[in-house]
Image (cartoon, rainbow, N blue to C red; front, side, top):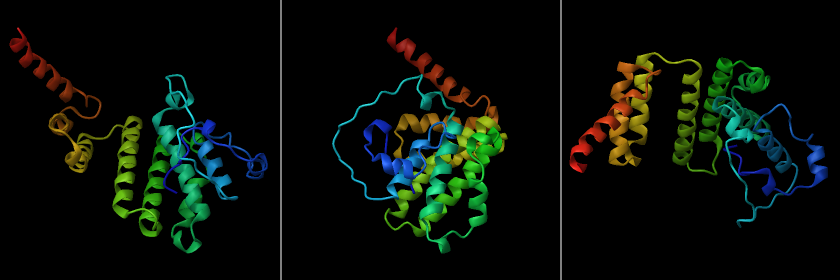
Length: 227
């Protein structure tokens, strides 16, 4: 209900009869069909995990995951996560069952980019709230941080589809800076501060200008010393 713990299909051994019983992998997904089928098979019987490095896989620029747009990838991921919650959660904890049914009524690939991003946002919001109130296996603070990371990633894909106003982009930068500030070194704090103050000035489309300006300035200051 929080993520798929299986990094790659070649790291899994499963019984053919169980795979057939759950209806095989859903070909309507580009990247998260495996997550769905792992969850379905896990709910059919016992599973075992071997904590040894027995599998290798290669990531490159031409595989399905790297060629799939981030917005589509996240939308599929949250769709499957929501479907797992819908399947295993006690009925009395699904307080907005009609909304869940609506979100699950259409695969992400069948939605246009904007509606796909909105459905993903709704799914993530529901998944977050359900886990914070009913998942007793993980510390609430750890879950909040985990889902906040996903939220920021999802907002980035949403902005790519529908660029925000300068004010909304500035508020987003403020929230990002406040949340991640404790874990930043001084360089990242400076870069993100430039991004924050640059947001209302240059907007989303030119969001990289402030850090590029900072990089040029640092290079100019270093050149005389090196000479």
